[in-house]
Length: 202
Length: 202
DNA sequence: GTCTATAACGAGATAGAC
DNA sequence: GTCTATCTCGTTATAGAC
Image (cartoon, rainbow over all chains, first blue to last red; front, side):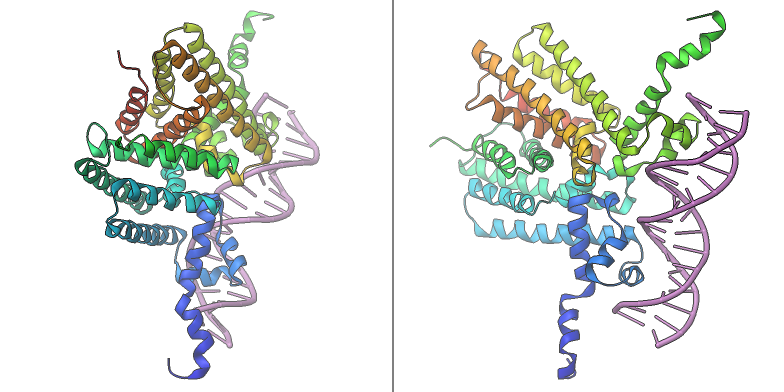
């Protein structure tokens, strides 16, 4: 901040044009898929030109990669917050499910669930980043499941990793189908049941 | 069949150019998504021109609609076959899961699971047909679940419809994620567990 | 950092000959 | 039923002025 006149520009810089672009692109991917939008869509919404977009993100592949990077980072932070709360495992899982439900409330699909559908059409760097997101979720879920079983608040058989994968897939799929009906309850009914089946009896 | 010389053309007609087009298009949608392929891709594979494709399917939207129609019809027939076998409900469910596993073995996603991701970008006629496919599956699953519970071969609480929706979503999601890892076992481990959790103890 | 202008290509679709 | 030829538009991406 050099002087007062820079306030407006500062405000834009604080938010960051690059971040605004990512915000719009993220919503477009989550609602239409990576192959379902163009630079023209983003430029139109932000009132800038396609050429300006290329200044911030040289290629669409680069934009996609940075999109997953930011999304995974935010998710990782959210998962760490849940863990830090140190509430019992069943409540941690319920909070985790709320992350998904909030995405669906915005009429969006999970970013990486959407990209998983288009997986074979995406550049390798994006493919790797998508698997990284799933790995992150799976590891976190497995950790909570294991801890809950040891604490006696959860009951299930077999390796926590297998159950973590089942839950991750089930949540992603419940979102996928629920979106075709624009019906949040469809997701929540399934998610609640999946969690309650894990709860240890009192 | 008018004479012997028509054999070659008959053979092609029997298979039907339209059906060959649908075969290729179906695989492309299941691997790349509806927004991930073009008429040029199909034409190239079949060695015909884009103009010929438009003779059989006036628009891409029309092709998409017919694709879901054929897929749903085949699925409906497969589900009726399972029902007609009159084996116990747990075995019917296991056979149902094998339908999905076979799709995944071909490195494909369920056609309608894939289209569900792109739902908001598709023409209304396709959107309706996708929901129709899900409705079909849900109704069949609910029927088998209810029958199994009455026969004492399955055990679960609550409305069969809720559980049918959970299973449908879980299978679709398990496929979606497994495909990102090109790992069939990821699907099968989750599917087997979902079914075994329903089995009534002896 | 944003613009205008344009390149270079691929998309869906149509007209009309054979 | 398939072809050639063409249209129109949208796509990603770049060059160079401001």
